[in-house]
Length: 203
Ligand SMILES: [Zn+2]
Image 1 (tube, rainbow, N blue to C red):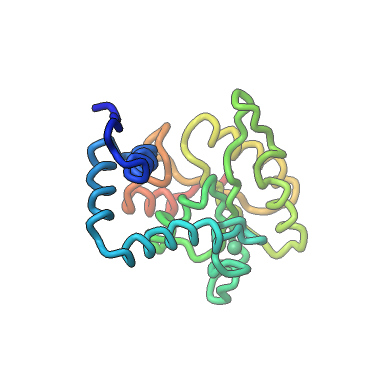
Image 2 (image 1 turned 90 degrees about the horizontal axis):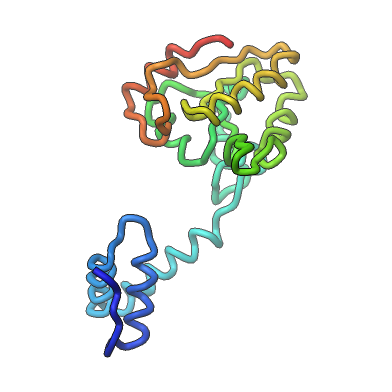
């Protein structure tokens, strides 16, 4: 189905178009959502608009671990009940949630915001590797868990970090095999991820 806005009021056409740009929302759903809002009380639209704006306005990156947060530092970094000698390195903020769900890791995180990918012009300086090394300077960290995704770029990035951190004498582990190769941590099921975390292997 193609979007066809003949005889449609401009504000309606515009919202349908915006919804249609979102992942997983086709033209029909976009239309349904738009007319739903049109028929709902004004407050409903205002709440939705506020929630969308707040997503960008009220969130920032934690200056310590680079997780997305609305407090500074983030709730994980400021939690004294967590083990700050263990850092789990992940690609994206979205990877933290599934790892937290396993309840098998009580350390803190470091979000790289990407992986090294020469094909896409992304080198080590484009992701938060320098920032990770800075966190290791005071010698308090004893273990780094490299939890980048199990694919070519994820492996290469883990190996690159290993090369930089190994001379510091910090124990480094990689999530155990068992995660589907080429898969994404974000979508791994809890049991598989728990096992991968518990069975993490020394590098
Ligand atoms: Zn943090």
